[in-house]
Image 1 (tube, one colour):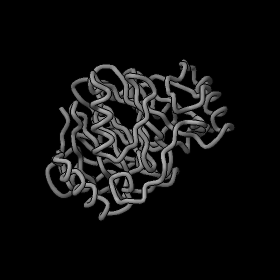
Image 2 (cartoon, rainbow, N blue to C red):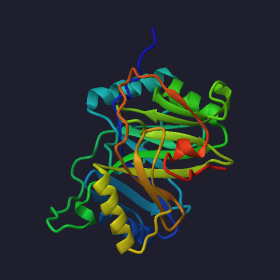
Image 3 (cartoon, rainbow, N blue to C red):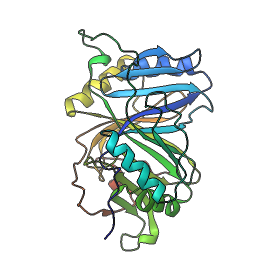
Image 4 (cartoon, rainbow, N blue to C red):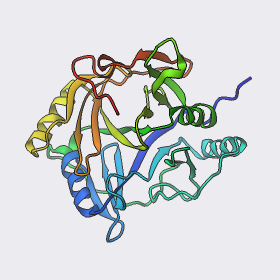
Length: 291
């Protein structure tokens, strides 16, 4: 009998984003996505809003050094550590200032660091906001996506080593698993908390914030317009995940998504296969086909 991974359930809690000018990038995200900013140091910033947290610091512009996945408690954390060690995967020290020091950090074949942990107590907080603004709009940090030039190796790691649950694949030939080009993975009932697209190189793809309804999509688009930020893709509806969406680009060209109505899938539901075509990526209009 195959042992189910104790990583279920886990939710994306925060990301680290790198910049040659961290203060400027933090200012952009604070204005665009409704974050309050706290200085961790002269070059590292902690951003928080309702259901969303980021760390921004110095590094290669557009870099994303780690993804932080929040677990439910100490028992699950211990089980995750034992499971990963049992798989022979090297555990690294956690770099996240938002998780307790005993968080479990593991690096995938492309070098992305995933950190599984529990929120650190005593971090700075901010007063409640009563005046309508981006700080009062819902937008829970929900998923992260990367591109790879070695999809089979990445799929084997996330499915067989970590035990994420596949939700959907996109394939050049839906009858041939060897032609898969996209893999969506869930770590709780939401359609995906992580996804991998086949591309010409290893790079960031996008990260996403989940809102509550179509009206929230409208309100966020109006907010972007008020800040002279153009929609880069959408609005539309994805095939895999069935979610409404639009995307913008940050100052480093990193795509950021606002999403609603993401599909809910029980753990036992098996993965489906979609043809790799524009309509799968956007049922309403043009698709973003990665190179």
